[in-house]
Picture 1: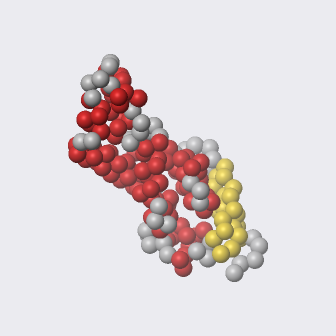
Picture 2: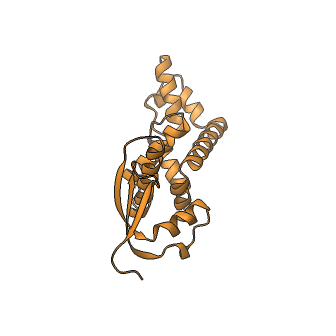
Picture 3: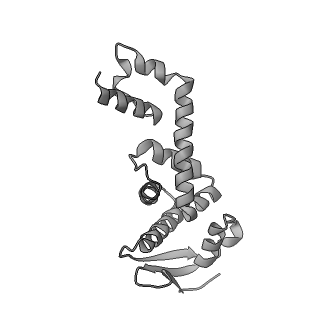
Length: 179
């Protein structure tokens, strides 16, 4: 086994993936697979990613926590993705991941909104228009305070636009009937 195969095998073990060389004659991967040290490395690596994502993806993290699926989303992202070691880049990759792999439409809405805001702040050209089924300012306020509750979900129809040319970053236009 060469160095590259060893490194890829260890990474696969850390990320709980199938290791191609698990039946090798040395038994190395089999001994590592069952070790307590591997469990510690997994926990530390996941903890570190969780901290990076939580601090960078404030809105999406708070919403996922409210829905009791933050840890599952981070674990799924961590185990299935190749990602950057840099906080900003891994945060953007996580927001992209949520838009593709999360089954909750509102989580996808908030993650795309958050990603558009981040890109605007980085000076990138952004133009996003999306419909929110809840009053955005109430939701955003609750998420930013990390105190979102059922009362923040005020039903309605709102057009939310994020545009890099907008000094306020985004605008909200209500439309339709409100309950």
